[in-house]
Length: 388
Image (cartoon, one colour):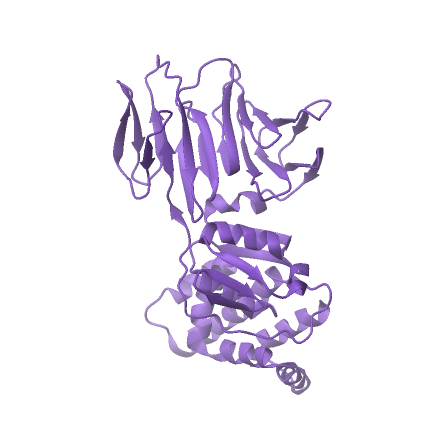
């Protein structure tokens, strides 16, 4: 790891023309090791390519230097020498910060990985889309619907605002007992405001079943997949999320639940407030505090401290990873981009990734970012991404 970090420092220094003769020899030796190293440095030295790449990379970091960089790059008229030197300095910093935040841990140490060019195939990111299934079986496609009112029953109505969010506006004395199901396909996401004012962000390949109007002592919903909840406080009527083997019970709080069928664990990540996790196999409910995550796997509940932003950044238009296995990363990308990944080199399964990826970039740009900071390679064929 130390050698890798030093190489990136040398690349950044070379962009600023600050390399000593000895450092230049080290960089040249590294470039001569394989074609990928040489091409990386040459691409970074290309001013236009560097400008385009840094625009993309700038979205991977929230530091103040990125704000300064964006301000400089947003000017149409570039002031010649002084601004160019400043811009190159920021670009060099971008190289170091990007690589420091997106490092692949290789086990075992890789050798001779071949690099394949990403084919010029456009695979667009996901978008706001879902279908609403009413209790009578009627299906309402919600994709593209905005500023719309939907009548249900005799007097009840649903509204879709200008951002495409679905909101229930039922009358105060409504006794509508029907259940509705919001289905979000791969390549989609959707926000809904339930009858009690609870906000729910539903992720790709997920399904939320809920009553059109909450009645009784509890507010109960059922989830398959992933959703982020900001629950309206109501001490007299606890909110319960029923997932795969675990019930999440809250009064008013913000938390994320991930319960995909193709994942071995059900995870609940608490941002604020408090929740209780209960399962039939548990002797008693487990209470979480803010910043804690409950992991239910193999009939066992583990509680750990986590950075909640890693598990909730998807509602803020980005994916964040910290030492996450390649297969897990690819599952998340596959749901959002609605593509399939195929790993042809088993050694790639031993890689772990840390970094942040903007959700609304074309997949080819995301793959290029990963290629430029690792020795992994991708090839896109139709809607399949091959990892070699």
